[in-house]
Image 1 (tube, rainbow, N blue to C red):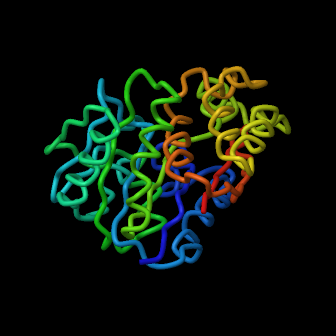
Image 2 (tube, rainbow, N blue to C red):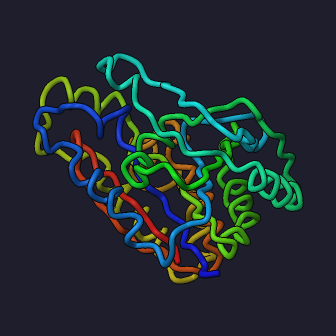
Length: 270
C-alpha cells in the first residue's frame, strides 16, 4: 500500500466555511486549500486519524465510536451552522490499532466510546471529504501539551501511514483570538499578526534534518513572536504530532493565508 503523507491543516474559525462573511472572500483560500487535499494524496486513504486542537485529556485518548455524532462546540453562530452534517463512520479496528501503538511507546491510551467529532474535525473535513465515506478516528491531545511527548506519540503512530491511514493535525498556526476578534469587529487592517513566528515555524517545519526539526519544534515557545501567536498552544500542538509521524520525511509549506489580520499556514510531510 502507498505510504500516506502526514498533514497539518488550518480549520478556520468556528463554522467559517459554511456561513456568509464580509468580505465574502475571507475564508476562500483556506476553503480552496482544503477542497484540494484529496488531489494531493498518492491514493485514497483507507481511514483518517485526526488530532484536533479541540480535544484534550489527561492522557492521550482514542475515540472508539462506530458512529460518531457532531459536537457543535462553538457559540454565537447562525442557526444553520448547528444543523450541519458529516456522517463519516468511526473505525473501531483503527482505534484499537492506535491504542496498541501509543501504549507500546510507553504512553497510557484509554478509549472514549461516546465522543463525537468536534468542529476541528468535521468543519475542515466536510470541505476536504464532503462525501463522508472514509472512516475517521480522533486522538486527543494530552492536556499538559508537552511538545516532546506529542512528537513522540506521532513517531509511535508512523506505521499507520503504510496501512493507508492519513494522519491529520487540525489547528491553527496563529491562534491569538483576542487580536483576531478585534480585527473582525473593527475591520481587517493591513497589519498581519504572526509573521515573525510564521517565518520561524516555516523554517523549523521544513528542515531537512528531522532531528533538527523536532528539536526546534520542541522549543517552539522560545521562537520570535511565539506566545503572541499562540498565547495557549493547543491549536499548534497537532503540528508536533504529524511532524513526529513524518519520521525522516521533509515538510513542505502548502498554504500561507492572511485572514482576519493574521497569518495561517499549512504543512505536509512526505
